[in-house]
Image (cartoon, rainbow, N blue to C red):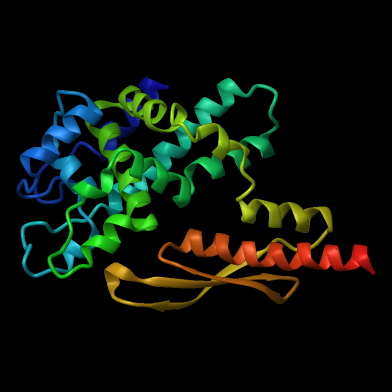
Length: 267
């Protein structure tokens, strides 16, 4: 696995120059640098990667911070994939009796925004986010979506800077060994999977999720998503991340289905 991912990153992620992932200047305080060194483990080869991981998108839209031109959204994209792979690897090795569907459901519970935000809070990640001067600092530092994005971005930065083994060690330390890990695995809050299972078991078309509205500033957008089954809108959800809005829409749909089941049983 290590050789595969080293080969993959050699193609696209270790660039320098005008189009590099690296920001132009360091904006990390000494306290944040010390925090990262304790969290990730010294040495950090490219501290600017970690700066990008901590840069909230509100900074990009703030004229007071012209040198910080890249938020953590690209690293979030990478970190999301790395987290998915590493958690999948752990589950595959440690739950040999689980079927593919069960493994997928468990992974979804671990890497959804609610769980990731909880992991981020446990390491005080919100306190070290770089925010725009005009942004609502308190709400962003407590925001589920901002914390989840930062956790994913930090995972991506560790992977790029120190390799897949270091990223795996970070996941084990801050997810697998987390005090809430077992309860998260046991929780039934992956409503999208439940809705898919329901439609499949009743021979219905697969749910279709569509964004119907986007509101708010670019760095504080809210997405409203509808979910359609058999040409009917069965649920809606609104959140700062599309995938979380989809979960809320699926939750509403499953609540309606569960209510109907109770009604039918009592009839």
